Image (cartoon, rainbow, N blue to C red; front, top):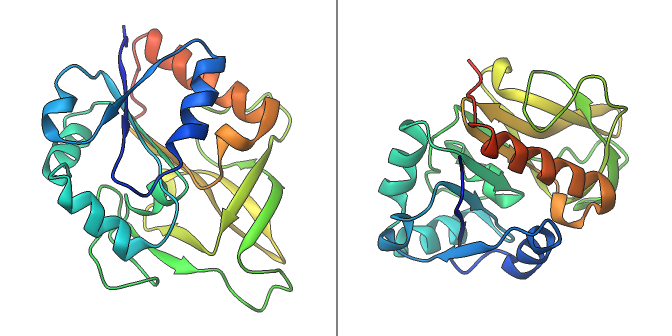
Amino acid sequence: MITRLGLIDYGMGNLHSVQIAFERLHKALHIVRQPADLSSCDALILPGVGAFDPAMVHLEQTRLVPDLKSWVKGGRPLLGICLGLQLLFESSDEGNATGLGLLKGHVQRLPSNQGERIPHMGWAALQHRNDCPLLDKEDPDSWMYFVHSYAAVPSQNSDLAAIAPFGRDNITAMVWKGRLGACQFHPEKSAAAGEHMLRRWLKWLETGAKPLP
């Protein structure tokens, strides 16, 4: 059973809103700022707000990068949020830094020819693509709150859990692989639908965090 959740603080995440969201679910989060803080954690949350390159610089400064890679490769649960999703990939149009590379693919700037405002700000409905413990195929489409100018393009379609519309096209909304998952949107700011999703993640953790193939 998962009992202790760690919230990674590398200076570029809205930790307060994430903490408040989990407090509503009666689950405390323990701040992780250095490798030693990981020792008592069972699952991690990687938030993020801002730009790709500065985020990777800040994350490197915590000395957590090797541990995060080992954590995920060892099959331990991690949930990325917004920029935290993008950092899981290999690279980004937003800069030259190398990402964590835990998922194959690249982060691209949202296309300017879709008649949509950039940054993309507002609510959009999720469309299921592949199995994910945070989503139920029987549920109606969930509306989530997005704020971003870039979106990941996974190299492996099996990693794509959900998409969302953007103009005449679609963008990556959620990814999932094994016990690693991430949301481009902000579940902590997505009212009842976001709360339901976080509750599903907690239930999945508490019932053994069975990995997807």
